[in-house]
Image (cartoon, rainbow, N blue to C red; front, side, top):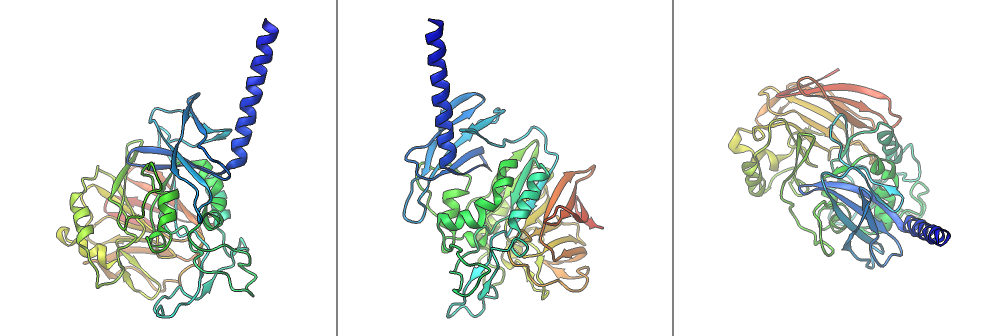
Length: 421
């Protein structure tokens, strides 16, 4: 009898191992995104007709179908909300990173995809058109190196401030730098531009994923809602022009995620919807505002943005709602830190995650007038990299690092001000 039980147990374990191995072969990506409902486990699977089980604290549970395969996305997307009390989770043998009880480090970056964009008639004002980045050269498109450095830093949280998919046009036939690259809002492009290079960082920590202007509905919005938007869905989620703000809270720290993807940098603009969102916010003390377009930002030719968001704050004399002590964004392809004379929340811009960098910002940013105030202290850097935020006595220290993990400079963010080395 004991021998028969042992044989049966051995066969069961072998079958479970084979099943897990089969799941591993189908998994294209496995990751955790954070939303108002907490942590959501996602799996993208090739050649699968049903979702795998997820193991949470030793117990298997069914995953739900988020999106079934179609012509553009020939993959099955599955998900499951993870309880806040969970201590471990895995899909097959792939362990998933869960929120931790303490928040000791946060990695932040954005604007990561490889720029492939042809010029089109009637789009002569698009300064990014006609640019084709060398996606096949890791020194010229270093997102994979950056993701590896982020993973090596072992953050508790990763924040991507938007713009994931930049491969919008076919690589020119004679261009060796991007030869063979996919393009368009489909799974091959999302895998090449984001999921494959980001894999080490996706395994390292849960992510807050901000929607960028490259993910508006007429660009890569359908792919963003299918793959990254943190709200669970029972069918392929439709693309919405404006996502309502939501708050993610980890270890007592609140992050208000605002969809600024459609907020025009210049006017004519319509600030009404954003003004209503700001007016409705009730931030906890010390909250961060996380969006794609910066509320206040300076480009290389001293163009100042964002006109829509600044007009939306007219009712509060240009300041963010009380309780927000730091604003994070991307969109401008530089690293930028702005601290203001009227002690409004400092602005950090981190658009150096891999896509073509913007021109250098020349001259001192101190004294620049923007959004009804002046910049008291400003710092800009024109190198690929990311920032690691760690809590300090009165705020946060941010160490800016390059794609080799080497320190570039350090800034300190406190309520009402930021200073850099």
